[in-house]
Image (cartoon, rainbow, N blue to C red):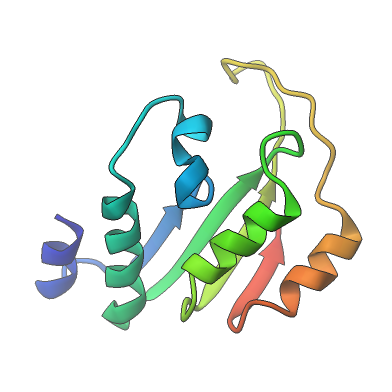
Length: 120
């Protein structure tokens, strides 16, 4: 579906959440999924030439520094990647306590990603 939208020039911006490194995806989303489709979508987006961003919501006890590094490798060639600090509120089903992304990690990660990387 995504490839068809891109091929028919029906979209002009794409934002995709990347929940985790592929090998941990099932743990984060709570069920087994076909991660080859996630990987294929990422490849289509990067190759499309359409302005895009990828983002990951950071929860400190679910994702490690190495997990984020693995996601960055997966996104090689992407234009923008944002790490979003988890924000708890009354609309969240499973309330999680999480500390914001470590500043030293932010500096280290910015050296690994060739595109624009930011923290929201």
